[in-house]
Amino acid sequence: MADIDYDLVIIGAGPAGLTAGLYAARARVNVLLLEKAVPGGQILVTDWVENYPGFPEGISGYDLAEKMRIQAQDLGLEIETAQVHSLDLSADIKQIILKDRSIRTKSLIIASGASPKKLGIGEDKYMGKGISFCATCDAPFFRDKTVVAIGGGDTAVQEAIFLTKFAKKVYLIHRRDELRATKILQERAFANNKIEFVWDSVATGVKGLFGIEGVHVQNVKTREEKTITADGCFIWVGISPNTDFVKDSVKTDEFGFIIADAKMQTNVPGVYVAGDVRDTPLRQISTAVGDGAIAAVCAEHYIENI
Ligand code: NAP
Image (cartoon, helix red, strand yellow):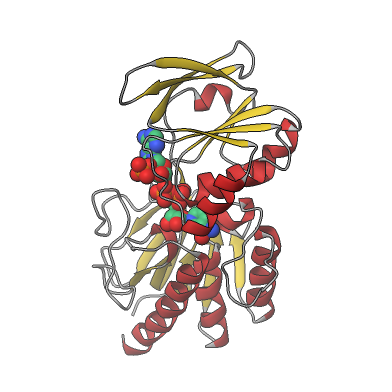
């Protein structure tokens, strides 16, 4: 086999990638983990995690991410800060193309996660000026102010509850009259008198010259339009896979999430996927961790047998 740099490269240092790295490092695989930003992934912007076993009082997303990073590095995992530009998976030796060099590896785990979806209501213009995807980062700017939160899933409901620690009022706008979020979060949101639900409604735009002054909303049943006066707008309407660098090199579903078998192997031998970027029925820290462990062990078997 031609010269290689690593037996295994992992892309992404969220819970899936860090767990894969931890398992590979303990198995003494020649492994490198590439992360474009700070290790931790989406849990870095999750204020509180209470459904990851082993932490009965809950733990902040930041602390959990740090514990995962420290554990993996203490066990010997090498982490490099680098953004992957593209992949060449056409030969047995896979090439990972970075800005200034490429890395050759026998196997690869894609654990690049997902990012918040945009609605196209001015996110780029008003980012940092009233529109946000991160309550942990930005909620303190809205102390005693009124904010709008958009979405009906776990993220929107959990983060809307967190926002009430700062804001005096949170309007939760959802396009249906029923939330998608898990029941315990729904119960807490319904019991929170700072949250007012705006059902059957979508945000159509924002008002404001230099910052947010309001959010334009339309009722999808009655077509009635109104503007909710607010100082901030948090958008949590789902996630898109971080697969720009993957292009057409592995099979994905219609939304771009990468398809894998029970061994986390994609349609390309030696290329595995783990965590939120995978086509999976459940996206949790616990499932990402499980994906990462399976992907690492199966990659190790693959490396031993080629
Ligand atoms: P999600 O579960 O996909 O929910 C997205 C929400 O946004 C849905 O309520 C959806 O409405 C709404 N939506 C989607 N597109 C919209 C549009 N164009 N306009 C208006 N509303 C729109 O996404 P998520 O809440 O970000 O969660 C992502 C994954 O992470 C999920 O698997 C979730 O369970 C997990 N997660 C778990 C926790 C936790 O366990 N504590 C916390 C956060 C996230 P519909 O309901 O009508 O489709």
